[in-house]
Image (tube, rainbow, N blue to C red; front, side, top):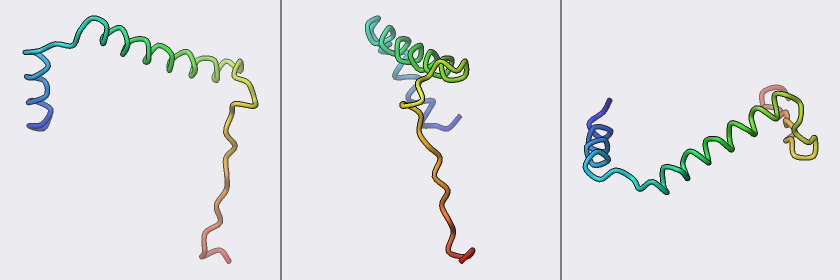
Length: 61
């Protein structure tokens, strides 16, 4: 851990976030986990999937 993270941790311990902020953070993490789970299970719509673009390098020309 760097000194910056230790300072942030001490500030967080002195003034912890509100219950509403904790619920918001947990909701965002939960939504992300649901999206990943839906994509891996094959339930994610094809229209919302990005396509991989192959970039050609200048050296291959």
